[in-house]
Length: 365
Image 1: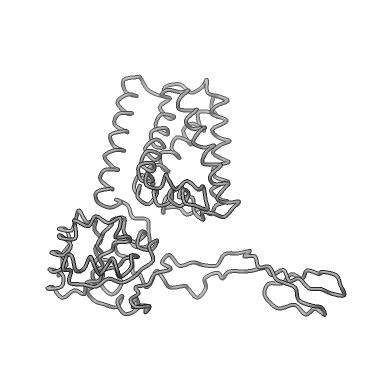
Image 2: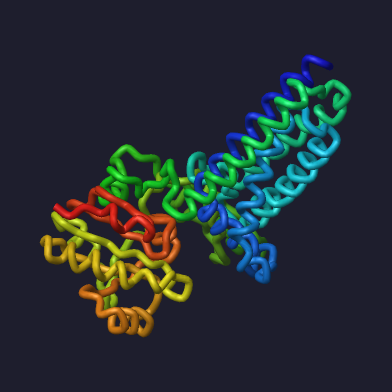
């Protein structure tokens, strides 16, 4: 038991640190996921949505710190009970999402590793079993190093977490796991390989045959049945290939200009997913930088999920030299974790991407 607890302790501690670090790298993205859980129709806790970012930061810092504490054997009782509380909560959350199909990705590993709802639930069940093993053998959890070294490591870990979060919030994630990272081509990300797996569906056809209800199952073809059709139920039994970039449009007056704009040799996108939540004061700086880009021969466009009534006011108020196009809010949130943020593209390939705090880093050749 002693050796089993020792191995499980290290494994669980490392897993919590890795999972926490991935979300620590992108707390804004994790806060978007929490907003999904808090929204009406899922947990129905809309009053928590304004605090999603603060909660996301607290959760990921605790996750990393608890992993460090477990490995070090620091405050054994507190650490184990915190682990149990966290894993019970997340197991409930992932089961709820899976059973009711409310949130299709738990966000457990951010954008680095995508898990289906049932995969997330299974992962949490396995973790729960492992943590119960640790609880059963808690007497074997002893300090790994002396108290002075433990305190030093704990303080260093906490400072590192806080410093890292502060940096990524004021700039961009250090590691970009999304399909819009620098160097990726958006059009290529939207393409579907010829040999990509296609979705498979099962159809349950109901017929009235001689006064009795009969069900005929097929994979798509309408069954030949001598009876009256009642209804059909469709179930996806195998998901098809979904390209990493989807739901990407650049619309204006109902027309999608994505295909044309992504062929521009010099294109700058000013992205503000929701102008009501944007840091509007930075648009003075945005104007200066975009005027420079226009003089350098770049086509500049704005992209937002806000309506023309808001974008037109913004353009007029800050005398912006470019127009806004409509793009889905979730897509814009995925593209850049800054509101506003700026991308520079060459024929659809992302060459530069910056937070509004780093506008001076943009280079226009």
